[in-house]
Amino acid sequence: MGWTSDEGTNFSSISGGYSYEPNASSQQLYFRAETPMDLRGKVLTLTYSASSDYKGSGANLQPFIQSLSENGSPGEWCWIGNADVSTTEVEVSCVIPDEPDWNITDDTGFKAGMHTNGDTVTGSVSVTKAVLADPPEPSSTVNVDMENSWRGNNSGAIEYVANGVELTPTVEGGGAVFDVVSPVNFNSATIEYEFTVDSTYLDAGYSLQAFIQEKSVWAGEFSNGWIDNSVLSSGTFTYTIPASGWNIAHDAGVQVGIQAPGDSGATREGSVVIHSVTINYAE
Image 1 (cartoon, rainbow, N blue to C red):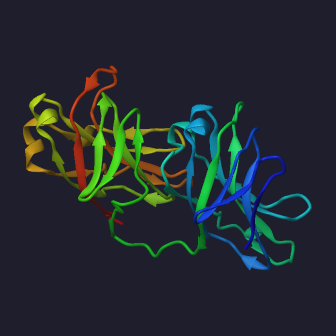
Image 2 (image 1 turned 180 degrees about the vertical axis):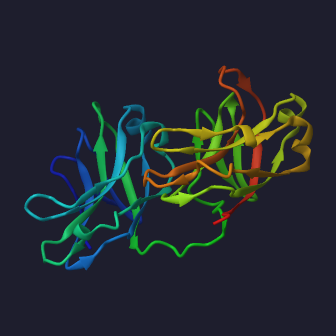
Image 3 (image 1 turned 90 degrees about the horizontal axis):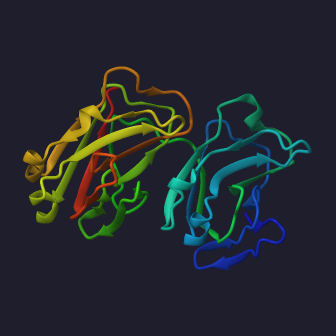
């Protein structure tokens, strides 16, 4: 499985992976693989990071997989909007449709990797790991990885620390989030948080808010996630998802996280360390 990139994008090997410097939309960093292969329902997981210049250019990213047949079909392009483009190394997954065309029976092969999308594209993108595998077996309980896959959201800043993920909200709406691959049924699920709030945040009277959002249309559930300042010192919160409306059928994913509530842009001082997150699916 050899990696390369489109011509003129300064492809290079880096420690543990590969990097390129795209300068236009639709430029790709990718590997090629042989077929026949049945790809129906498989999951492509990439560990990647983008430079601050790339994120600053406003460009998006698209994990992709595409047949090398003459007409380039079938193909699947997932989506990382610029707000979610990470400048620290994270995992992102792209689910291949469980459709007949993805059982590739000829020897044309396929390519998979990262694809740029934007009016202005500068900077670099790196991939250090790519895994193409069957989807994980359904589990009613998932312990969220606290060492990878988190990112800051809406001006929130995160740092991986010895006992979890530290969130510094900086402003109202600043948060820490991770992604869950969809389709997924969140109806009546619960999400258990364990955390520690520092004295600056607590004494200022701020509250917290757990939430989930569909990444296709950004519909969210916030009302059940209110964690009032009066109970923050307990360090635990169980967030219950409504019994209907959250059986997600699309493959754009779901964003899950915790934030300083509000949208006025007001400054928020202090920090929160999230020690653990456990998702309990009802079905």
